[in-house]
Image (cartoon, rainbow, N blue to C red; front, side, top):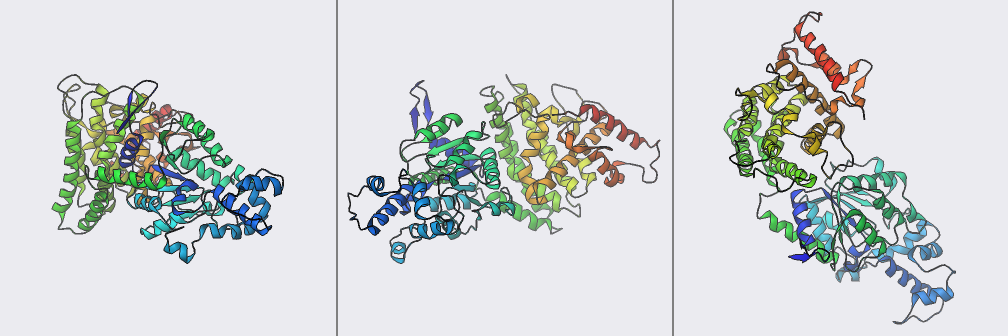
Length: 597
């Protein structure tokens, strides 16, 4: 389905198609922002619906007759407290404390037995579809301005126990967003708590903890907005306005025409707008489109199944063939993809290059998880040759171009091999296996048909700055700033989702990645006899990694590096030790490569 841009006459894809394709390609990258319109299908009233009902109750209690023609605004103008009628002003007048507000609001959100039997105030098509999006891994973060618990109830019914953040105090002890299967952030609280945000004054600013969490989600995730007008929530609007450059797109689904605030936010973030769609149609429609895309690609559950199978066969010393076949199956998929890539990019802009890098990474996803899991659990070192052979096969998947080609576009055919090499290296360092790190960098070889005639080891052929281009990476639209070491930054962030589940937390992963970068630089300095490239700089050299004694990772290596693996004299540390001489040489090189920013 297409539509036409009235300004240019250009035929555009339906935004629902664009959204489904993006969510399918990057599961977990998009967060939801749900407003009261998502709950109206379950007959949970909007803020204005609550206002009309409360004014009718007040009028009835005052002895007035309330019929179908009752005008709450006119009645309040004549009998109210002089303030303009609104959700916040009415609540602040009728219930002066949070606990009073909770009691006043409960009947609007909790179904009676009769209502439950009539499917009123219980999860409906929108909530059920959202729960399925979470179950399949498409969505992991849900923000809502609603007090009701319809989303939580739907998630629990689908077998997902969400992490619910409904107050600033809950932010302190929350599981990191990247680790939790699902996090529901109730920006304005829960109707059953006494600390909801109801009045205009309360909605004008968030607590610092909640504001910080909101800013993080808006910065790190794409955003799908549904059922929210932006008319009342000043603090939320300000947060969206404050995010000047988004990493991922914003999509706004609206049942009716957008108001002034929504139009301003859409314009600022160049959001895709899905018009004339209710939440009860929009989310089931998105789910159907994702399920249709599933039929064209491998099931998203296959990665988890492959990892589980690998863990089982790794534990059995007689299952070498099964381990090999698991890896070989994924390697062949990547090799086929690489060989079928075109030799020229469709355009030479940052968006094109960003998509190209992300697409290659996506095709390697299962393989990278298997490599990380396999090396991490291969404590008896039964499969060392297999890990290095994977790198070798991926290196040789890059073939000689046969016609007109873009040099860097073709160089990216070695990106899967580089990702595999880094994955094996980080997993090896995390388990104290410097021997595997060295073997993976020295044993696999490749000959550049347009370069030197001799074969070169992976440490040269897959040198970070030989495969990746820092200037191009810094052009990616996702970045808010330019990075000092763009290839290093990209690789570290690209492999984070592979290693955080293995290593436990992001800080441990970052430290392990930096330790790995130092060791790779050391290997390149010691063993790259041909001198093709200098040791690769990276974010392990940024300011926080230096102490009064020098580079932190050098000190760590001197204390805990595997001397036998590196060929370091095990007996003496005298000044004439040739290995110490190499360490000191590298130290001076890295000081020159250090950048401040």
